[in-house]
Structures are given as structure tokens and as C-alpha cells.
Image (cartoon, rainbow, N blue to C red; front, side, top):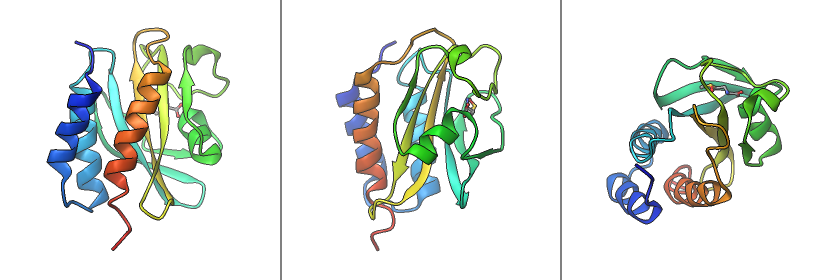
Length: 154
Ligand code: SME
């Protein structure tokens, strides 16, 4: 099954309307995104819990490592740079952290609240090589901006 981003966006918006709790929002987004596309083998969040430190948040799929410093991994690269990490081949990414030996490609997106603060990263792993596209990055970023733009504005 291949994701239909217009449908996914509407579904997530309906499920999260009026919600401002980041964990509840992360759990909902991880669930709906994971189930939307067969390419997505691990889907979840790492939260900023201290300066330069990420800790696992809600996810779908096999176990994920619990903590990631900003200095390591694809997630750390997204957190410290604030830029999307679209990795066609994780073996070619110098300090990729392999939570599963079956992962071949990865997409990691920064997650910001309504004030523009980095509150985490959104990580999707695929067992397929070169699974992700710029369209995936753009569409998922738009969903994350809409959902997490509700956080931290109170
Ligand atoms: N691959 C990530 C670590 C998280 S596991 O994939 C869930 C990284 O290199 O940061």
C-alpha cells in the first residue's frame, strides 16, 4: 500500500483537533503514518529531553534505541542541523545507528512546536533501499508542522 498524503493529512488533522499534548500527538502521528504505507517499517519520534540529547518517544515497529545524542546518528544529524535527513542507503551514512539490521534507508524530519522550538525528530526506517522521496519529506513536514504547531502556543 502506498500512502495518499491528502487522506493521511485529513485523518491526522481530524484525530488531533484541539490536542496540545505532545506525547498524545506523537502517538497518533506515529500510528497513522506507520499504517499508511508498506515502505514504513519503523515509524516514531525521538524527543529533545535535554540540551543535545534525544530520548525515544512513541513509535511503531521493533524496539528502538532509547537515547541518541545530537552528535550521533541520522536522528542526531537532523536535530543538530535542523535539516531533513533523506538517506537512500544507511550503510553510506557514516555514523548511522542501526536499531535493526534490516534497515536500508531512512528519513528523519525535525519537529518544531508553535514557537519554532525543536522538540524532537520524526524517524521512518525502511527495509527497502532508496525508499523515500522529496515528496515524502515535504508532505510529512507539512503534517508535522500543522500538528505540532498546536504545541507550546498556550
Ligand atoms: N537510525 C537512527 C536511530 C533510531 S533507530 O533507527 C529507530 C539513527 O541513526 O539516528
